[in-house]
Image (cartoon, rainbow, N blue to C red; front, side, top):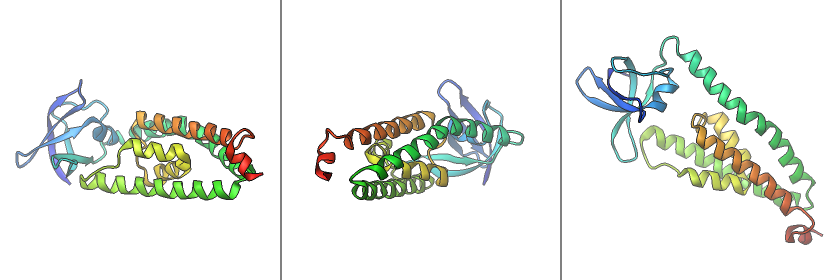
Length: 201
């Protein structure tokens, strides 16, 4: 890791610049600082960071060594966000699986859910890999679309096992919405009024 000092900080926009010992200026975003425990960054803070590039090839800090005394605070903040959404997942997942298993088309639906879950898990893995390299990222809309179609169990597993897409609140709320809509959609599809139910008879 490199050592540098936060020489410029725009609190309103949530970004600033780190200057290294060799006088190089490196862009840093508030999300990267918060993950390291810097909840109120200010000019003059000395940090250890890992340098990378974004999708356009611009130099930026992609990770920062945890702030002394701030790591526990950062972890607790992340866990509190996790609990609010994941507790709902703990309830939605058994309900979703029960609906799949009780459907007349359980084999078809089960295979579809497994396929979509595997697909979206791979998308999360690829996106995390690209993020570390500063390469092309998977659009968030694509991740949500596959989740909405029934792959959200795999998306949730990817979030937990890969620790990816767990810090951005707007993304997680959208993920929760896609999972809930997926459950509602499945309930409609297996109801007696749909072609899927009629085909199974």
